[in-house]
Image (cartoon, rainbow, N blue to C red; front, side, top):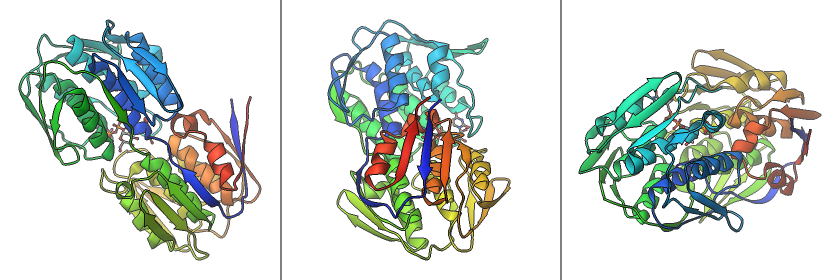
Length: 418
Ligand SMILES: CC(=O)N[C@H]1[C@@H](OP(=O)(O)OP(=O)(O)OC[C@H]2O[C@@H](n3ccc(=O)[nH]c3=O)[C@H](O)[C@@H]2O)O[C@H](CO)[C@@H](O)[C@@H]1O
Ligand SMILES: C=C(OP(=O)(O)O)C(=O)O
């Protein structure tokens, strides 16, 4: 398996362009099953997860063509298969997002139950609550899950937690249900707004995305559209932390600064200068990084997908920092790996207490999940010696051309292919 090697690097300097958001591209690609005419998607990041969802679409009968870099053409006019095979489902949890579109388009959908993963058990009860409210029958049998409905009828659905995936799956199922669906306590992430904009371009009637109440009026049929995926706020945040941790001067381009307000605020709290300038953000590091605290929350709170990267930064901030993870029950797998590099971190339930150290040491470590991997790359940039990161397939799920982008900023990073 490939490894990423990171050597202690000089302060990172220069410009880096952020790719389209993985977490927008995946639901939008799933929603492409709803359209009956050509769909052109731009700014799609070339990632392992994108390849998997494209394989899922192909297996369901859609035509998927990779055109120029970042551009994918999809035609779902003749989809005929309603089952996603276990092999594809097991490669990526987000494959579950095809259930909503298939249910409303074909009246049936079947797949294997998505399991938990390194960051938590990740149940799907809220997705199913939504499908049931719209009139679907749910059938769970031998690890498979089916949803069936002769007709879907709009209803009012309250989400017990503003789940991103459940909001997306229910929105997609509701776009062709009869009458009006209202989702209360909906997730408000920018990726939900991007999905809503895409659905409306296809001819849907979705209002309120980005607030906690989303209203969807069912339509009979959806067509085609051209749509550009929004920039990846988590990739942007990762490079911003890279500027901070190396005490560098990094300009992150193609970013919507409103989407990463908490990251900007916390970087300022640790002492960095952050300049917002149109669609770019410049982070200038400081010699005296100060401790701070973070608590992850659904949007617009501090994103759980930036928690590990920020913790890497906290390991060398002066003083004691506290991280409280409220979104996932087990998202501290990176702690043991950071400790192997000399970090001083204690876990107490959902809190991690980080005592800043003077320096980190390179070590062989494992990317236990996607953002844990990104955190180890960041820590490796400032650790003495070499950090050898294994299980990098996790990193490849969510970061396009990661070594190339870091190298251009002056990082000593390379991949060893095995
Ligand atoms: C592909 C994608 O967009 N992934 C993102 C999405 O994941 P995902 O959509 O899976 O995350 P959710 O918002 O659904 O999950 C948040 C919490 O709700 C719980 N939950 C969720 C659904 C459900 O039916 N029941 C339930 O209890 C989960 O276990 C978790 O504790 O949002 C997460 C939270 O911002 C991000 O970390 C992921 O990067
Ligand atoms: C947890 C993440 O993704 P997924 O939901 O696809 O596992 C992530 O992007 O950090």
